[in-house]
Amino acid sequence: MSTQHRQYDVLVWGATGVAGRLVAEHLTDRYAPEDLALALGGRSEERLAAVAEAFTGADSEWDDLPLVLGDATEPERLREIAEQTQVVCTTVGPYTTYGSPMVAACAAAGTDYCDLTGEVNWVREIVDRYHDEAAANDARIVHSCGFDSVPTDLGTAVVQEHALETFEAPCDVVRVYLEAGDGGVSGGTLASFAELFDEASSDPIARQTLANPYSLAPAGERDGVDPGEQTGPRRDGLRGEWTGPSPMAVVNERVVRRSNALLEYPWGREFRCTESIPTGDGLGGAAAATGLSAGMGLVTAALSVDPVREAVREYVFPDRGEGPSSEEAKEGRFRIGLLGRGTAPEGQFVVEGTFAADRGPGYGATAQMLGESAVALLRDDTDSPLSGGVLTPASGIGTPLAGRLRDVGFEITAGTRA
Image 1 (cartoon, one colour):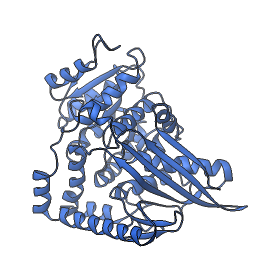
Image 2 (cartoon, one colour; image 1 turned 60 degrees about the vertical axis):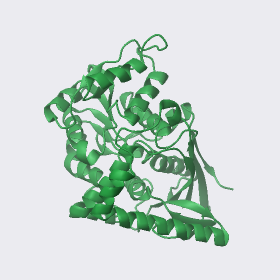
Image 3 (cartoon, rainbow, N blue to C red; image 1 turned 90 degrees about the vertical axis):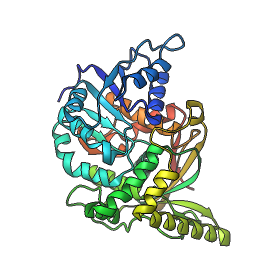
Image 4 (cartoon, rainbow, N blue to C red; image 1 turned 135 degrees about the horizontal axis):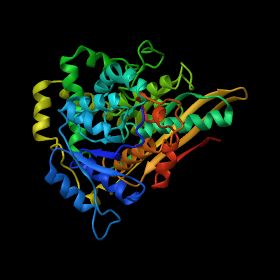
């Protein structure tokens, strides 16, 4: 379905929220108006105008940013918006509550789409409802284009690319380690996290999605050798230290498995991936891993109880739309390490990888990852063989996204460990 003559190249949908504003700031800082027909979308014309004013005028190349008004619950209006746009870049969450109508509009209109969701239950629903229609209409619906799940998914793809180019064999296991990071988490992100537990408390499909490590794979491919995310302390033989569970593994590992399946198993059907937090060696490392595991267990148990979850929402989580200033969002950093192990005719090999940025993962770095994902889709700067469907960063865009992120300051590497 041709989108060549549409009015807008990229629409930042939800531009008045913290994440949307940061994406708009990134795109107006990095691209010129003659290179990118950018628009800002949301419900409130007054609030959108205030965001647009911040990025236009005397100190900016941008004289004007069109405003696109609509409500996330109005399917007909969303279809009109999708038909005017080449790429919808949406930050409107929780996606379980607000996301499905926009996906439906883009799938029907042949419009590319990217978001920040970490709501694995919702992604499973979108896969089942819209993958075939999106594929038929050449609409690339690319979920999880922020800290969930670009570093893990794209980092794995970069490690596997090095293995295949160097050894002509993939890694049969890739382990991802959340080594360092600081920076805040938005109210929308925390609300999305709570949505996982809301859905699991009442929906058996959502519970099955969280229980099955392969729940995001295509229908008929939802089983395999990988046992799923780590829940307790574990001594990691590849890294030589103790690790504890990662709170993001429930999403990120499933996204990686979907990437492998959608790309027709270039990493093999026996491929396994894990994500964890390294805690050090010796008794101190073991104690830290045990404490981390216990803490994760307590949080999970608490959020599984309806009254506790509602109290946490009310008194602990910030409201949707709350967050730091632009300058505060640029503070922070994160660093993720990767180790991939495989076997070539010459013997076993190990590939080391890094995915890092000098911006906080929840705000500044996420805005860059989502913004560059949108422009990569717009310019077809991908190495993906897939022209449409419900995709992942690695399967829908691929390693060219790593190049785009390096250009804005990310460190993304892969090499053979001696």
